Length: 448
Image 1 (cartoon, rainbow, N blue to C red):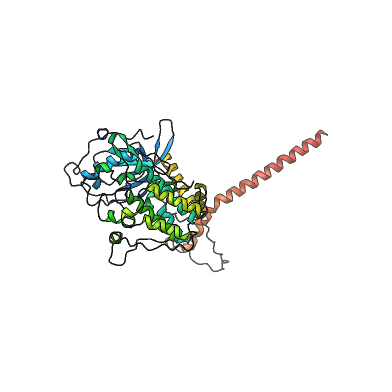
Image 2: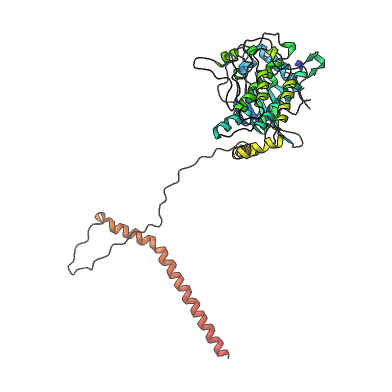
């Protein structure tokens, strides 16, 4: 349920299109807020990272009955909130994305505004890692992602895209919402083997696609996963998302990036050319079949691609069945745990410690003091041996010229006196007890 999401623009506080009440707006240069921080009903406790449009935090919300729910909060950068077109676009798209309820789509839970320059989106938290991190760790550890798991990931992404492309917004007379940024960083993998597509918030639905008030600084989609028509800035349909899914499948099966720029060339220029090298599928069964699927999904001319995400899903599913490369979510979860168990466990523990620290309140700052140099007490000074006095009498030196050794000896004697007293007291007590015992013995003998 997403009942907490405002359903109309009027439900949000008025938007401010200028700076800070007459002042010039300055971009936030620090890496997020000081934590923990209260933002609306959420307590931010971990700064995950910063993207081109938002600071990203782990956060939690505690109900009146003490139920704790962990979420991800994306706080839009203040300089983007100031842009009139982008602010309106983000609010409209977040409301549309909040209506999408599918097992392969990250749920949008809340859209809020605080003060004049703070706009944030709270989304479902998926415990695991994104596909970009999986690819990076696999390359670093020389771990090969099995072909059946690669197919499973892409098929789940296609299921999410098919649902979003066909979703009907009855009150708007609109059908479908395009993602526009299907890339590894937006594909989340849970430890249970779930695959979820996130961040529909920067997409533009069909009914507002003709508007041109989006800030030029805002790039919709990553160039490394763009279709040629998106790189050219043309109006898009669902086939642009199909193209991006094809790139991801190609990279998972080949283990290398598809778009690679030469020195002096940008990825955007590579996307414009769309020169797709054939997949080396010699290690895969039915190699020609998977090459044909990729060739159609990555056709530079969208008229030659799969018409819908559902069409590509059917083709990939059929190939997985023929090649006996079907995989379950349990197998995907087992693969993640088996190969990245230490990293995942460490990340889990860090998050738990952060939540526990938040529950205890702000952390105290501990200052380590330098230990003082210990001084032995009482002072033990070796007494100098006294020589036997000679028969000849020598005059005593004046007091002010007394040798230091004698002064030290005097100090040593004064310090050792308490020990001599305690020793004498002990001897006296022992003698007294012995005397009393003797008297008692005599009295006892006379009684007999």
